[in-house]
Every structure is written in structure tokens, then in C-alpha cells.
Image (cartoon, rainbow, N blue to C red; front, side, top):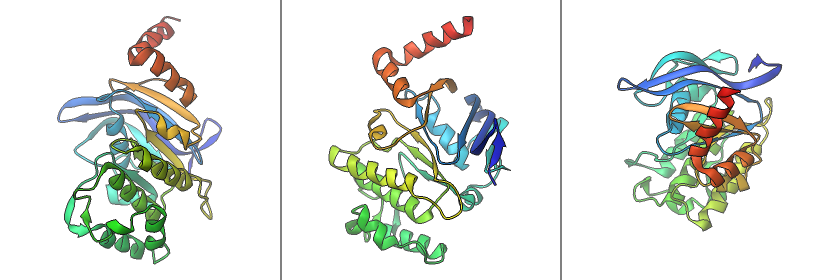
Length: 258
């Protein structure tokens, strides 16, 4: 069951989240909600804490939650191990996925398919994403940016999560691959599950290109570990293109004075 707050049904609720790494505060009092079936976009310059937020939601890395809570479908997962979060239905496509020379992509995806009772057709999804020729290669070893992104999406298709976290799907991807990645991500987020509403997503973007493929519902601008504002994602991106993230800081100062 998803959490209920503000009159809606939220798949993800983040409440006043403050996170540190190696004694340094990275995220500062972050709050946001993602209802079932909605796609939210996260904007911000490098080093603003966007990736840290996704990793904290997933439970990855040496991150310490100093205060606040993460609620997924009504359950507090703030201090839950990453494998339990994955079993509950959270999946992530990382910007820089690890290289595992001892394991091929095919071996990994076949194991994932078997883990789901054989209901996930790894071969079919691999064909959709043009990953067939990657199956016998060591996982992510010498993969191009586009190949790595397609491999990440392949794993998500097999996992079939309720909440999808995607870190810069356009990063390192050429124009030929961005359409493949964008279409696959759109189909993944649109696909209906038997019981639940459509999948929800939180997607980080720098270029904004991925929004050509996703009908995103809400956007956020993050700067120095804080969410400065939220609203229509395309409107926010247009403002950032015109005025830069420094313009967001000035806008925030004006709002604070009102």
C-alpha cells in the first residue's frame, strides 16, 4: 500500500531528509512526494547532490541519514538494506555503472530472469534494446556510454520495479542511442502493472533531451544540497537555459523576502 498524504497516494515520500558523507553534509532538509504513475525530473549543476539523493533512496554507498525519513508505498525504508528496497520494487539506472569482468551481461540478466520465476524474458528485452551482441561480453567492460545505458535499462525491464530512479540517461550517449534509450525508458515508465498504477520515476537530466521522450509531471531544481523550487519541468528547464542556476538563486532570494 502506498502512503497517503496531501489527499493523494504517494509511491515515494521524502520528509525533511538530511544526508552526510564522510562527515560532510550533502543533502539538506529535502522534502518531495511522487504519486503513483507520475514522472518527476531533477535538475541541478554538478555537485548539487542529485546523484546523492538517488543513491540515498536506493540505499547505496557510504551515506548517513542524519534526519528525516524515506517512505516507499507507506513503509519506512530509511535504514533498510539495498536488497530489501529492490525486492519492494525500487530500481535504479546509474550514471556510472560498475564494471564486473567476471560476469557477462547475459549471465547477469539470465540470473535476474530466473529470480523472477522465469516471467521476465531477458532475450526479448535484449532484442528490443539492441543488446544481443553484448550478451557474451564482460559486464560494462569497454562498453560505450550508449551500451552501458541500454544495459542498465535492460536490467530494469527484467526487474520490473514500481519506482524507477534514473541518473542522467543522456550522459555519454550519442544521438543514435538517445532515441533508443529514450524510447525504452518511456515504454518502461508507461507499462502498466497488473495491480498497481503506472510506474513512477525520478529522473536526473542535465541536457533536458530525455524530456522529449517522457511526459514528466513535475520538476525540481537542486542547488548545494537543497531543493530551491519546483514546478512544470519544461518551464524550469527553460528558465535555467536562459538564466543559469545562479538565476535560480536570485529567484529564491526574492521569494524569501515576500
